[in-house]
Length: 427
Ligand SMILES: *Cc1c(COP(=O)(O)O)cnc(C)c1O
Image (cartoon, rainbow, N blue to C red; front, side):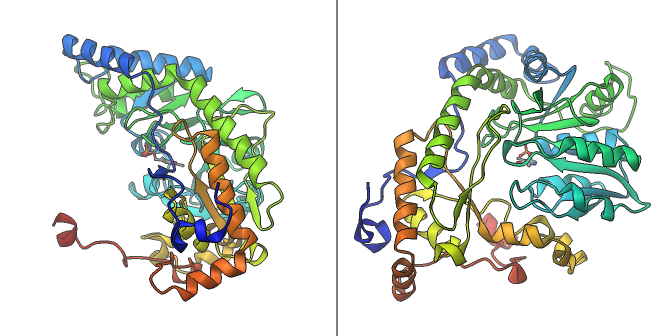
């Protein structure tokens, strides 16, 4: 445990961890089982196209979520795109401004305009009180996000959708294995979309799924994910290639077998962060409702610089030097990303809560690669930095050799700067 500032890596000490601790380091299940499955797949010479592993994965995911249908897709983004198209969404769809770029892009990619809605400060989820004022004659749906593995206010959103004749769907990419009022995520709205990307709680290298209880919708989604084909010679619609490979399904099945251990590790880490960061002025851990099931995948902390006496950026800079790769997740907010930023430059004015959250929040490492002791070490550094906030800020500014993460300001959100030109990227 580091006890004084001189032990910090930035001020001459050794880093607390020799290896980098990433946010969202993949949870690897039973390697032996994965190898067996891959051998089985190679022996069978069935690598894609609705193979036995994909079918088994779909069955197991549907069973776990207690939902009738699961269509496995190559990733969460394509799953969102297919779902929007299968439901016939057009015109405008209301989405929270604070989410992965993939959420609005899945709409914009097919010429549906995402209309950004503000969020709630305590949960970071879409604010139902702000949804109705965004509805226009062009609105066809609401795409809400269960951010940080906590369901959004589903009941209120469903009421708004019903009242205005809109389709309600959920980006549940964070929220597999979570419940809302005791019912598993996957059962709400028209359908819900999962991601099994490597950094997600349950992974299939890359992967996604559409969960629904609507058999007609399930058939349409299944067909659209395989060029619109329904059977060997029957094309029933326009489609894309959104198929999950057998290799991904093999990894997904193997991950699923370890799910209890992953949740237990995440929960243990969450509770340790909660214990260690309690009563630290200006530092707030996003609280999850423990009466519901959660996968506890995300450790989200807000640093209020005015109260803590130190900026979030300074805290992250100190942590990174210690090999704790804290992240400003979903910063600077989708409304500050292209193409939305240029198309709707004044949008930020109606998103005050989002603008506050993107300036305060950071995510911290958890998962099976992080031990309870690691969490205690990480929190000790945060405590040390906050305790000596003024001195740390002073020393960071004084020492010109330290490159501090530039303080993020919503008015000067990055656009093309920092994005390598194609020529450089290829070099
Ligand atoms: C990861 C993620 C996506 C995209 O999923 P991919 O499988 O990476 O395409 C969409 N929305 C949210 C909220 C996510 O976290």
